[in-house]
Image 1 (cartoon, rainbow, N blue to C red):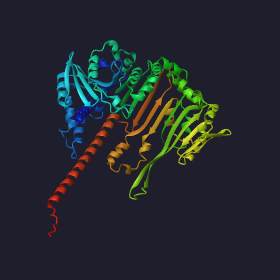
Image 2: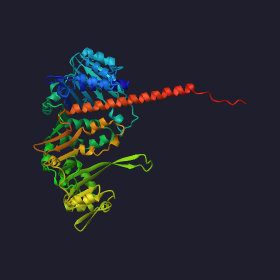
Image 3: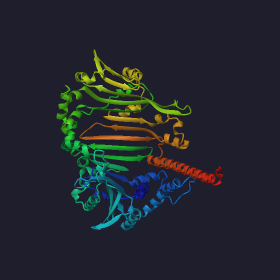
Length: 588
């Protein structure tokens, strides 16, 4: 039964990717409660148009799925379960021509669940589709709403509910069952009654109970993105506090009130768009009164570009860099009400939390370069080659107040790690395969002592490209990955069992990833990410679909070939058995 349910879900997902068209402003959002932790929307109209521009119509995608899933000959197989299922779903009465919503929320008594909402064109067709494709489903009627209970596995139930125009599906996993903190032998909880009550409530929400009544959700609704996301931080914390199981839940509950006060009124709105030659994401954090006041106490530091410029290589494939005021961490701990308890423990050691905050300057960078895959003969089998990835890397951060830092390293537990000789700090017991050094206020750890020494002097620096530097400049944090520098150094032997054409496509798909997080201003912070593709002339989603379809076709052909080989081996064994001479018998 699980396999059939999984197949139905696969069919539904395939249909979501395939079907789309023009639509007016969606109305499904009126069924989303204001207790929702997050809401994601998919604009199928925009996605379809972008795929059409790359020659990927609904019919073309279905045709490709059926051919690649049919076997080695490539002919279309209309009996293929995925293809047949998608075509059946087209006539299920579900309208996938508008915005689809996915969200997580909680019932009034705190039971968490996940849900999706769509539109119906024909409720009777949908009911027929459900009873045909979902085994043992029980459908009842309550106030013109049809409700179907689906048992996926013990402790996990799904509830389908629909009226003449709208369909929703709710699922509520048994979190306690899957938590390592809880007694896993405890009987699973049947959530069907809870979910049934909840769908009735959702279909009858009052205006002030709807997420659409919230200012932050109204801002989210303005996003004209392929995929949009709204995170209600208040509800996320509230629902987590109620549902976090076991010891983890007890720990979170200890500072729950302080956390709720701190994040009150905070939310995030994010968007993701598939453009020609790139995927572009943007996220904006809006901070509530308490958190805004706390952040305003600390200037938004920007990254120190010199941390990148000093790196002694022109073959850098990536970095991550960030900067922030360490005292912000201390104030967050105080806001949560943990400062007294922490200071009580630290005082026994002779230091305070403030000493730790003062000792370090949170300007941190991680840099990687010169990636390669080394092939070495196996010590056990000379015909076998070991393939080991290798790269140069460096991690650096800074000392803050020297007096506070000296106080920390004077602790008994630190004497075997770091000592101060004169005005210099010496790192002890550095592994032979690594390098480490403290130069001025820079703490530097790297893949070799030579790399660390060259970085410390800065004489061999200035080799990182201007594009990498500009990506980080003026930001609180930034990350960069050059996929082409990584892929070009991977030898073909690594992909010995993959066709060359697919290897070429995989290695030639992605160019680079850039992320940036700006400074906090007016209680708002904007972060962006851009994943660039090598092919700049075709939509990024179309490129992904084409590559996945090609890979799937190759996998199915290989699977069919292996099945044929095993079948032939079985036939040969039967023939050998049939013609084998009788065993000799000794007669005494």
